[in-house]
Length: 282
Image (cartoon, rainbow, N blue to C red; front, side):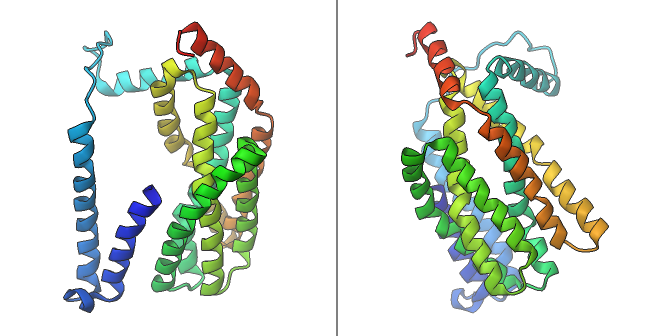
């Protein structure tokens, strides 16, 4: 649903930018500013059902009311990490996810910069973004079907394998058509790989700690997303261009994939289920 909702607004904004006269706009610059404003309005509108229909639970007293929010926040993260470290398979998966997801995130973040460097036009890159968005809709469902037949971990490994091929193919990219093909390939695996990663993580998380552990999952992945762009930049500076940088990202997929192969998902799920039974939540 996220792909569909975001994709609808993306199509509207792309049309504004490419054909502003169709919408009685004075030019592309105005269309860009209007697009940013439309995103704010979109968020505001679709936040209303959440605010109206989802009750807010009362705030829990933590005993840290006198501590600064920053210090309390990092202290809570450290506490959650110590809790996660008690679950060997969950921790191993989390480290694997940090690594391969950093590669995925870097491809997404640096695609336009790389495309611009090799001469891909703004219009072509915009079209590629739309391709990725809408290809992701059916293939996200497809990955769900695949997980039921191959298993969640194997399906994620398949997605990582495709990302490795994308990294290598990116080195040889020359034309807008090549960019479209790689955008299609990214759309094939982007949503499915990340959704199945969250699903596998959730299956190994005890129910009574799911909110805390998923909060850590989301926050920690942001911190872990620093290494990929850093490697991309360092290699680009050393090589005098970004072609080797895109290939260098394969390191994240190899290391993350190898760690993922060592995750015993059945053991992780068994431990979580034991915790659920002990807490009366089975």
